[in-house]
Image (cartoon, rainbow, N blue to C red; front, top):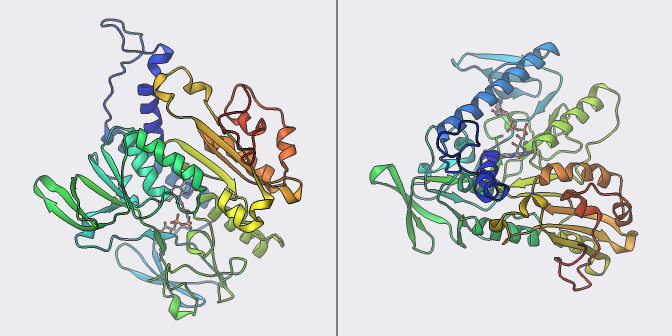
Length: 430
Ligand SMILES: Cc1cc2nc3c(=O)[nH]c(=O)nc-3n(C[C@H](O)[C@H](O)[C@H](O)COP(=O)(O)OP(=O)(O)OC[C@H]3O[C@@H](n4cnc5c(N)ncnc54)[C@H](O)[C@@H]3O)c2cc1C
């Protein structure tokens, strides 16, 4: 769905500048027209079919590896017995010497009058009909990504922000993403939360905000956090401790307070909520349990990307975190704003620039503490830097790396302007 927004954006912002336009009437082989209409139903069906095919492949893979897949809901009876219930309500038991809990999380519901009228980020991808005018509640990456793709495919979108955008990410970059989204037509209602939702005529939802203002939407999507799905797991029956606030499970090397029970992924306290992190933690744990490995899972320097739909990829510390941890005197930032080549022909792109910054520890040979990149294909750009950061690279290592021209990624290895110099990030290089 992010890709749908990117494609639509490209058609509207870039295509004409590259000479791509509506075909003259009667010319069959010319490019398709620029006038576009987004068919939610087709996208949804294609996406759902793709997911179904992935699920099928996973099941085949499991079968080929000799893993039994049971589509049943589990609940602990004791530390070695799981009671499982199938869709028809039939209950049976499984015993095992060890268990790994990987039940993930569920979206936190909106606790206000009429909150049940809102949908969650779990629902949006399967929504049968186009969501129309939408309010996204929350400013986490999930809310902003949903807002971004909905606006990108042509919907009227507002985001209700209680405090700040993208908590936990680099502040400077989060602000850039906010202004990019605003310039792409997304409205922000700042420092408000919904206080009441009510159905009004035509199946619309009237939202009253905490500041007394109201508006009417076709869809209200809530993404105000996720809680670990551990409450009905029967953990109290076996003594596995959970955090009373988010119901996550504290672990030591993925082992819970009950020695034969492990936890990985979103359910584990302190685990970055990302798919590849859950997968890698599972692989490492299996190797330690059954393969003689002693390697713990390394939760540091994990790359991630936010798709709003402008992409923001990062790895390591944000500038604020680095200053807090290493002290302002020890932290230097190399930064640059730049125009990606693929944006450079179209006037409508000129209001925004891509951006990158590398945060280094001056007291440790300019070791790289964080890399941040906002621009096209940021996820693709950042992945390799994740490996580099695992190896503890310095800024000089980056500077010694020959870039790939003419890409946006080469900006990371050609940085020269420091923040402390006071020079504008738009300076530096030609
Ligand atoms: C909208 C959205 C966008 C995201 N985008 C990204 C992204 O771009 N990149 C990224 O890396 N991550 C992304 N994430 C995060 C990612 O989805 C999670 O980090 C990841 O799925 C966690 O994996 P997990 O195995 O811990 O849990 P899950 O994937 O949540 O799997 C848990 C499974 O356990 C099942 N289950 C629950 N309770 C029981 C029970 N009692 N018995 C049996 N089964 C049970 C659930 O049905 C579910 O199938 C996104 C999340 C959301 C919500």
